[in-house]
Image (cartoon, rainbow, N blue to C red; front, side):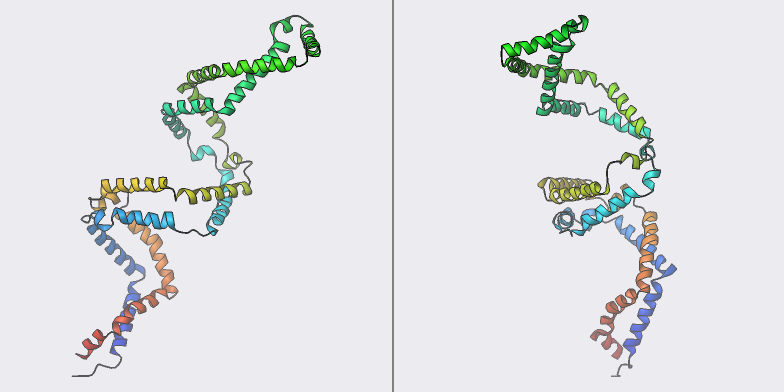
Length: 342
């Protein structure tokens, strides 16, 4: 039995590291990555999605990362700062609303919204039934009626002096019969209370007839024409940095609560189940093709993102240290020593 050549394992180890370092840069690395992409895509043509990753695993990722993961307090602060910078950027003053959303696109959105007649009728009914709207109608009718009786009816406008006489008569009647005003007001309001349901119903019927598709389309498009030439900076006038940051914080607080609701998890579950019902038994390539992920897309992103990152990590010494950690254990193992001895 011969003894192993001194330091042969170390020599092989260093040669292996040097070989790998040379292959992990430039054209060699790019060629290697492209070849691996081709191999992976070949497997994607035969391996079903559910074999690669199950729907339960996907839901597990959603629960761990989206629902349960603790988020640092610095996230809303950073988001608020970024929102402020975005809204203060020069592009806001140089970009009009029409450049972001064209008139044809706005018109298409309107046409789709007009198809939601049932929702529109439900919104109108909800507004009509709201106590604030009913109080508004009651006050408008009451003050209009009182104004008409004392100041603006046909008699007071046609006969000079009658309006003053009616006001004078009102004052004298109140002196003669204290509380007459209150009684009059109470009776009118009692009448309004009894008449209000009918007024609301007629208002709703009027709105349904008045708010036709043509009327709504013309009104919205007229408003759009007045706004499409405005810059984003002009449209956000009045929204200061403090208010913007508060909205971001409120939105973040909403998200923290919303992600923990059964509703959110139910929606995520429904989406994942549909994905697997459609693609679970199909090769992974079917899903990639339907979402537009082609070989060219993958290779381009590797070249634009992965290669520069590897270059930086190599220059910083991380790649070599990784190789030494990965290969060192093998070259120091008993199996290598036995091979070299034999």
